[in-house]
Image (cartoon, rainbow, N blue to C red; front, side, top):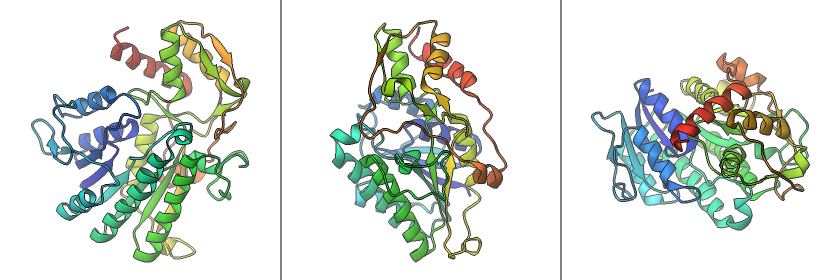
Length: 345
């Protein structure tokens, strides 16, 4: 598989994955709407790292592909998944061997204030991707789901065989809709699809809306951090390089209908570290690498949030013969090295 479409390529995971694919010799077409959910400066900086020199709001225009400098292995298109005409044209112009859909409106709390952004990108946009895959007989669709689909009532550790019918945020509901939509298209049209339930991905070039990044920004400024549920929370933090390695190994392994009891070429995997970390312990590690003591505002639980996440990742590890290599201590150290360089601390 040589021609890959990566959506959300100016985003956190999409950037790291695109970088890996180009390094491995794939021809990557990438797409992102470069919205202002968080700083577009960071998104353009990622594009510059991917070889789009001078990438800025003045140089990257909607609907006009931009080639990477000096080679044809990476090109970028500013576009929105919900733009049906543009997405249809993209699939019409290129026969992709695989499509990796990482573009989505992210964030649990943001969905409480901006619900329409989620249905536009995560539902309507994903439908356009599915239609594109159907029209061109794409060999493998890999798409981002989320650990949030497990809701508040899931048993620990989360297993893909568990029922997931109690989402507690609109974001989670749209990701659950993606899983059902992908299954339907696999059933009706034979599109091999793999859904990945991501668990709290972190690392260099991360998303500023994520807790670890927000904490670092506030602690650097001497401002207090909000610690929800009085700190009685834990997350299955997963370093971004381990995520990318897992996706890379999955690309040439589309599910087969013959391997499924229902005869549908569709699979779901948890993609996490399989080792949850307590929030207060996590803050201590961050304090250590920043050499700062955090001021903590102990807060109640927020709407749409859950106390714990913990991925049962046995089936994924067995399937791709890979287990995460970066623990939380090393991962935070790497993040802080990047953070201090990026912000010139």
